[in-house]
Length: 58
Image 1 (cartoon, rainbow, N blue to C red):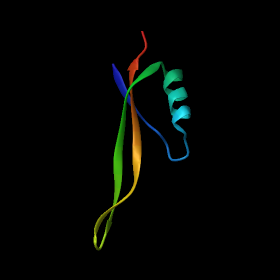
Image 2: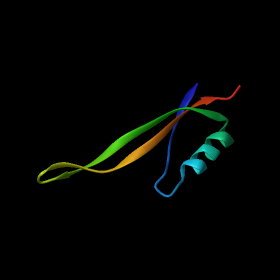
Image 3: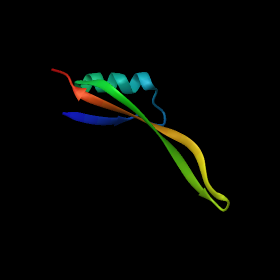
Image 4: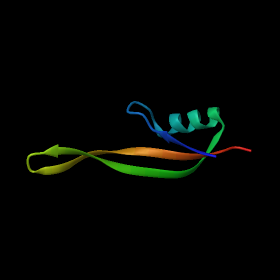
């Protein structure tokens, strides 16, 4: 069973990993997605979102 954990705006990667561990998940994959904003000249990248995928610990 897998679950995705999104790193919050005011949360460090280590804090997210601790939250995963408390819920009983081990990190197996890290995904980074760009965040875009629409401007008159076209889309503009304003940051990225980090998502960790966890697998249930045995």
